[in-house]
Image 1: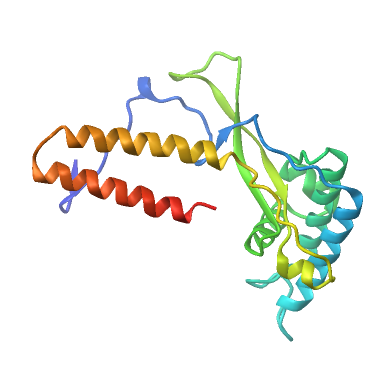
Image 2 (image 1 turned 45 degrees about the vertical axis):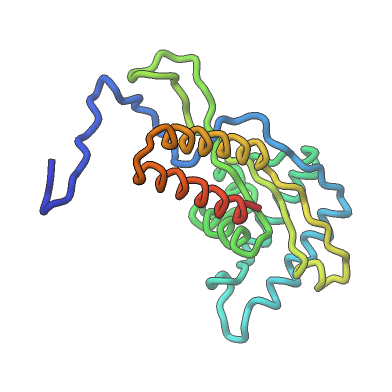
Length: 219
């Protein structure tokens, strides 16, 4: 099917659809690398976030404006820090739970989470879980579950309270992901090299160059 020279993919046939509402870039729940947080570290994190909120907000600028932290964002951050202390780093509350605990709308919670992430104080991963029920569509049946959250801080925030900054370890297994991606790229390049045509040789070279460039960008 084409529209003004553009190819539009036809809808997937019903017998090939899973009919599962899972958000993009979601990963199977389990295997998260949680980082335990002490009560003292949590207090320092919250204090540093409060100081940072005052610094990034300019005079006359409203709370929650782009690049700032709203009062709700600070409450969300404190709640997540407390959950990290109680759960030995395991933080996976639902949006509804945070909304109930802070007495704020779900929309305000979502905005607060994004504000914290923009300033490097929080990170999360979308997740799904497998279900046992018989599915309507093909393939394994899964459903969306709560996000996994990692409370973070920054050198800038800690400098405001005079505490030496200690970077937290990467929340996800980046090394395993990097190795898997490298194997895929090498397999693709090797397959292209089996063809002696200049076009295939060029494609293999571009594949290696693109992989090397991405490796430098991965934290």
